[in-house]
Length: 310
Image (tube, rainbow, N blue to C red; front, side):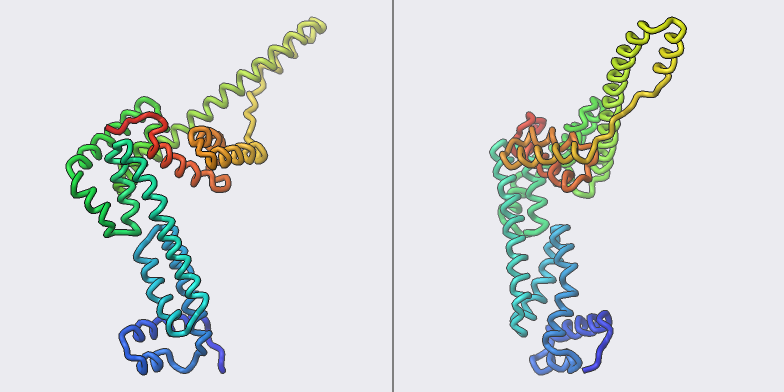
């Protein structure tokens, strides 16, 4: 058996796969050719499908996952591939978990009569289940109401930005993006709110740092007054000219906040969890950003911060 570049082999096999699905059994055997063992064919096909499955899960893409399932079914049935069977089961589990997650959010939002929030969750659900009958019926029965609330939420988002209520603005714009992921006003609104919120936090930290520094300077100044008169003026001037020191959050401090946030989230104390995670300066620390997004979903669905849904 001669060796062949794996990339070229992959292209050849995937091309032959395309031919296989439109050919008879005899033709399909010919299409695969005689250059590869069955194990080669299965391995190269799985290598081709692995990144597509990963991307399909990341993007919640029904088309990518259905593409992968079709090909996995083929090699599982034709070559009795155990790995293909396992991957099919994993994909089915992903579909189930995805549906369960959004079904719970939808039930919570409906219980609060949050029509537009419910519409957004149904839109997310339809990414994986485009023909879900409950979603289709909901949009059909609430079309005018949803359109009205769509415009209302855009106005509310702008109002919250003007009022410097950045968390509320982000929550409203997230609600809009759940329903309409391509809405540029909401995309820009979230970016602006996050930037201004971070700027606001840094400003507050500087104020706290300056206050602490002033307190320390005053303490040292009182001590300096007790010293010799000729040294007093020079010591005070040196202290007052120093810039405030802003303490950067250490990795250990971030980890403590992260652990507290996870514990609060698991106990369904979502407001406490939000405080802990948002206190982490580096939003990319571990999966902090993912937890914040999920907490926002929970808070919105459960109406924990009060309603601006009308």
